[in-house]
Length: 192
Image 1 (tube, one colour):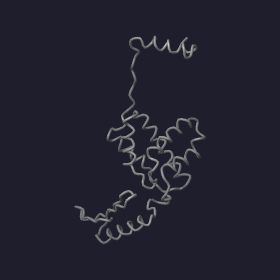
Image 2 (cartoon, rainbow, N blue to C red):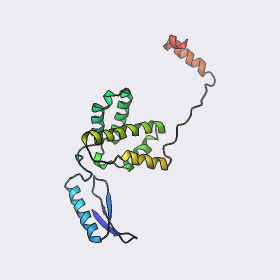
Image 3 (tube, rainbow, N blue to C red):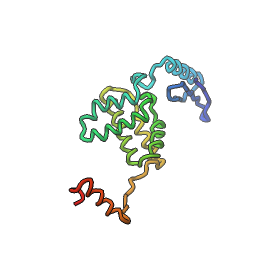
Image 4 (tube, rainbow, N blue to C red):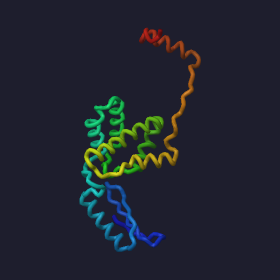
């Protein structure tokens, strides 16, 4: 539904919210221009026309990651670890349409992921997602701004992704003997 409001600057802002699409807003000099833009955008979204560029409306993040894995990842040296990251991203974000992928969706993913893994792991996940988006822009010509780049800036400003934590733990108690006992049974060469 399109709503129009006057800003303190005197301009008019139109906001459009349609279920299944990200909310969009734009400012105009006159109220009439804002209303016209809002109704036109609302009609396009209701008809299922993608307003984010030339991305098919049914192209999901899952489709993007699958395409990226088949096209790019299999050629890389670290393809097995990248495939694992792609599977994780597909499970967590796969149902989002690529045209609707916004920085806030990525920030929500980061917050959820940080509950179980460290920030370095999340940074690597975001690197894979960003690379997939950049590849689809370059190879398929999709017109989309990479939301991962924007999300990374926000995460940097909010200090959400902390710097790498240096590990300084030492073996305590009988841990060394327990490790040697385990290795003697599991892998005698390693215990030597």
